[in-house]
Length: 155
Image (cartoon, rainbow, N blue to C red; front, side, top):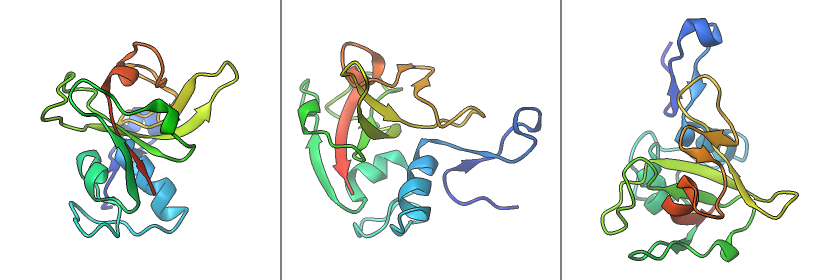
């Protein structure tokens, strides 16, 4: 069975062979399948469909870029609204000059103690989750995601 973009085959031992979603696949499921935003098979520069990869979502998804890192200055967290897409340069280091955006999540808002939270998924069988191999899914402080947040997009 061929899977749509964003779906990864899973190890049968972990999920019974059902598959799972990576970060862009999860985002596409939420906005595309559940909210009706059209999906693109790959890179699509039209601005009318959600592309398959995180790096393309940052530039070409419908909606607007709310804020983007410039040099060493990350996007302003105060501008975030629940439902915004948060895109990261998480695996590629803190290279803000020529970033490789490799992770996307959906901003949820403030938790019970006032921390900014997001939800994402990964290729392993336990996504979507509120934590990851890179650290807690927080946009505050000095954790991986707070340091590597690069682009905020509102659909």
